Every structure is written in structure tokens, then in C-alpha cells.
Length: 288
Image (tube, rainbow, N blue to C red; front, side, top):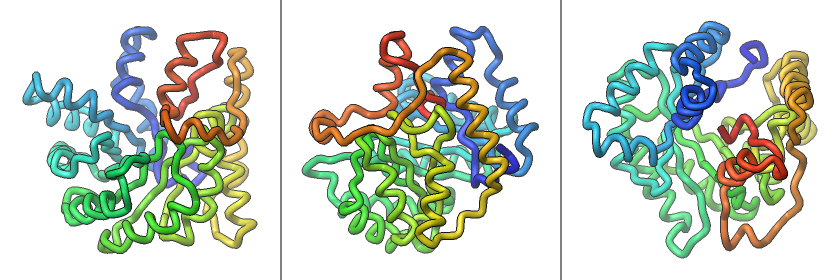
């Protein structure tokens, strides 16, 4: 994975760390140290679940700073902050604590959904505030429900980029209703500099678009994708073989399902339900 050429490798979340302790009886900090040692060329990343942070932070005032310092000390270099309410002030305060705690790179989510108030202006206002913060290095559109259509991306992405002052914008979307990969194909022309993908059996389904397929399709459309294809193929085969060896269901491309536009069930929630029921398959690595 370190040789592929990824901008970063998403490795852990607060939920993942809890699972390591509760079910595996393993030290989550040792997991992080081993990953950081194995990937010196690229930043190992942590996704900080803001529900989790708010819950503990309200009760333990020193939790935020101590958690970020410990993550950075053990090898996490990139911190992805996602507040489902798109609370810019909270995200900026959190970003400041990450940098003060030794974190190298902070990328903050603009969490996408469909509602009467979540118009382009809503995201532009928050993007302008976040991009002006000196502790935030980049933003990303986080589309957990896979609801971002290419037609909406045509207006949303350029509007956000226009107020970011040159900072990078990434895109993270789920394949739940078959829209994500189409939107990914348009995103580079609209100003997105990185697309967040999954690999092998951990891709598709309710997870993110397949890394090898995205790279191939972008090249076919005339884009330059600077990844090592041989290494990327090995990564994809590894996760597929891992899934097969465990007898788990692999992710497959999804058909469009308009019901999701109403109930908006996010990919991570679908994965959690699947993990609790053997009849529903397995949770993918991108959803842990």
C-alpha cells in the first residue's frame, strides 16, 4: 500500500479502536504503531467520529487534546474530522487541538445530504470559514449516503472551490445507489484533487468505488493517475483473497435505488447492520 502512490491510507477510526479492545482484546495503539512503521512514505490517517468526540468531550474536558497527542505520538499523521452537523466552529477548534498535539495534516469534512437547508450556499458558507482557518490543510466532501449526483456536483464543487483559497478539495462517496463512480469521473474536471476509494472485495456495495476501476476509467477519460498499477493490483488481490478466505460476501456494484433519496441510510449504517447478521454479509474495511 505504501508503494501504490496513495495520498494517504485510511487506517483507523474511534470505532475501530473500540472494536480492537472489545472484541479482539488487542492494543489499538500497537496497531497504529505497526501501520505507521510499515508505511513511512504516506500518512496513516484516522477518521475522527465527531459524535464520539462530542460525547466524551462534554464529560472529559481534557479528552480531545490527550487523544490527538496520543494518536500523533503513535504514528497518525493525517486527521480527518467529520461533524455531521457541519459545525464549522467546532471543527476549527478541533483542528487547532490536532495541530497543537503534533498532527501534521488536518482535512475537514463537508458532510453532504439532501434537505431544504443543505443547498450549495450552506456548503459554501462553511467551506469559506474552514478554508480560512490556519489549522486546516484541506477539505473533503463526505457523502455517506452516496446521494451526490453528477448534476449536483456540477454546481456544488466549483462553488466550494471558489472560496477555498487554493486549498485542496477531496471527494468521499459511497456506492450504495450506484451514483458515486459516475460523480467521481466528473470530479477532477470540477476541481477535486483526490478521490477516496476502497480496494478489492472491500470496494463497491455500500463502500467506496473500486480503486483499480476508478484509476482505469480516469485514464480512459484523459486524466493522469500517478499510481503504481502493479502494487495497486496486489492490494486489490489481497483484500479479495482475505474476504474469500473468511467466507465473507464481497462488495458488488449496486443498482440505483431511489428510496435512498428519501431515507438516506448511510453506507456505514448498512455495514453495521450487515456485520451483526450473517445473512446480510460483511462490513467492508472502509466502513469500520
